[in-house]
Image 1 (cartoon, rainbow, N blue to C red):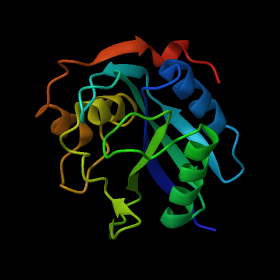
Image 2 (image 1 turned 90 degrees about the horizontal axis):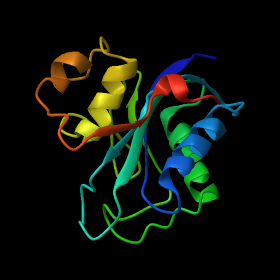
Image 3 (image 1 turned 180 degrees about the horizontal axis):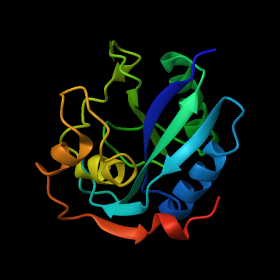
Length: 168
């Protein structure tokens, strides 16, 4: 079976978000359906949506999998459910959010799956963690992650746990 390269954004702002992300990375590292190739530091950020919610902890990881994109997304949603994810409001608070950012060079746009992720280019809490693990990755817009990140600011992002301090 063909191996696919996928990048996944992780986010949490409820019920000990720092521990949620460390536990989610550990959970992603224990799957038979993929291999956790790399992961970023954990970053703190302000909420993008409604401001009446706690700050977020964010990270990005790279997976190598033989699953097709839709099956990977379903598996990621199942992990969100394991962590008690409730979909209450758009851009609202959550125990765990796992967004499929990129899947090889594939493009999907429908109600179930949108790849590349629509917020990929303008969200510093996604691009800066991605920059940490894949600076020379060429994005679908033809720019590298490093080039795209130059268009954004790190303002409002804080490294909470450096990658080198994370052991899974």
